[in-house]
Image (cartoon, rainbow, N blue to C red; front, side, top):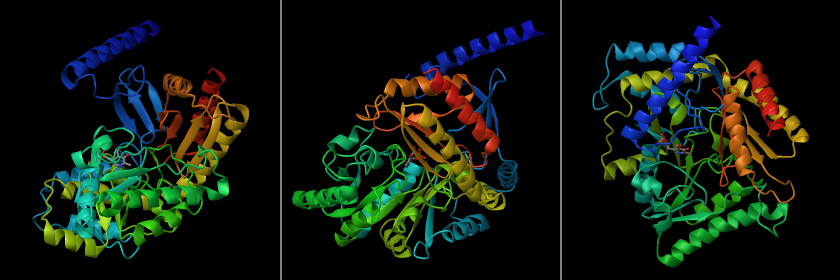
Length: 439
Ligand SMILES: Cc1ncc(COP(=O)(O)O)c(C=O)c1O
């Protein structure tokens, strides 16, 4: 029996190796893969994933299967609608209207209209076109370690990752408003002013270049930037500069939206600020590709008067059925409350690990979104980049999936599906503790 198991595992390993070779040859070696030993996944359920050898992994990384992998409610809604009708939005259908009504009802009253797309990149592309058209400007400000998607125009915003960002004149950046890695000589009480002034400087630099300012586009969680803690008051001060220069506030909620951060449905609400345009994606359809823009009605009207926007797949009845089922599950299973409660439990466990392991420089948490910054020395904050890579791979070998992010790739990034419970949290914390002991 045992021998058979070993043989089957061996066969699975060689099948995985063969799949990897075929993937490299047909998708190219630049098609990214997680982990030194890539995972060959075959099944998911709730917060669990299974590989080809039948091994189970706790998913503490994937925010797209928001209400849990293959949630039966979403699967049922998708299959029922797929067996009834799927068609684009140039015909009348209840789903797109009902979904847009339910979605916009979750925003401030001023954000009363929606446009649906398939990806977060498309949503940001629409937001850019809308902001540029409605302000008559071209200049967009982002952080200096941003990623907002992969179309040509959106790649210009990718200051952390994309070559286009280096050459464009219509995008300027300001330093990530980080309260942990701070500029030398700036006291904590002045940080908010310091970073807000950097936004103002970017606005002024556009003006000096003869480029009219259009808006500030940020992820309110600064997720790709390392889920930094923003200095208190920064957002209000920065937005005052943006608004007095006639710019718009575009909140990219593609990662943190739909209640991940627990206290609110949308991450911009943490700051008490209302954006002009919000972009959405990833968790919206629990893995089904649906994304979109929610914005002020006057902006959507003005944009629509200028350019016809049609998206063949965006807002189709099947996508909207999936997205509606996601809202149902979030509400019925009270998953925002769960994010608050379990999020606090995980964060407290992470802080206990921090008190034991000096490599943990900073623990940041917002609901079920965690960033743990690893440093070689707590005083110098030298990034522990190699150690972070080792830790992420060790966790994978121990059956817990996390990843890393940030300018130096030294921030553990954890965003589990929302039905994460105490038992899952205990497994995560115990495994992380063991892997830290062996680091
Ligand atoms: C903050 C943010 N915005 C936008 C996107 C782009 O979304 P998509 O990959 O669906 O185009 C991403 C993707 O990682 C993202 O992290």
